[in-house]
Image (cartoon, rainbow, N blue to C red; front, side, top):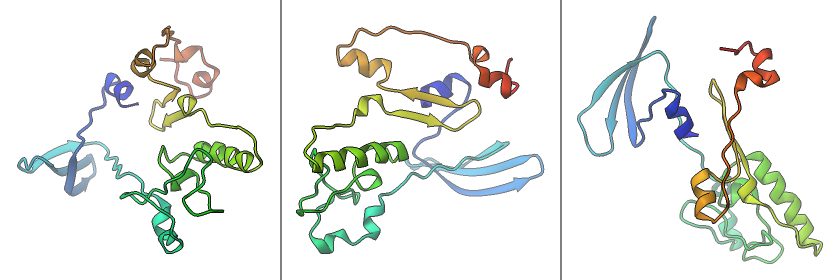
Length: 175
């Protein structure tokens, strides 16, 4: 997602925190400091998107009182069946490592129940879709080109113009 957005002209200033913002009729004046300890600088922009990340919901469940093991980020440790270290307690979705996506949790839930029933189901994490809800949107399914090459796959690249998609017409985005 970041690489695609960069090619579209967006810039990223990772590891930077905002120390203040002033909103004006024509935009925002944002005060920033980078984690290397740079001096504060000011950026003027039209809009500000603040992305601070997500945290596991496991920290609110007091699972440690039941003896359920988790890592330093609060994510629950599970085996291939989504079972925790405590017999009879399973965890999926935002409680376990991996992307915090609803469709990931849904797939893990189905597989966890099927595993409890004795089936050998699995989740193909390499085929997990992801979307960045910007304009234009960025979507991906599966491994990146680089990751697929590293895994030894024969990679074929295809390109498709968005304007050939019916959604482009519906959104009046033909330019």
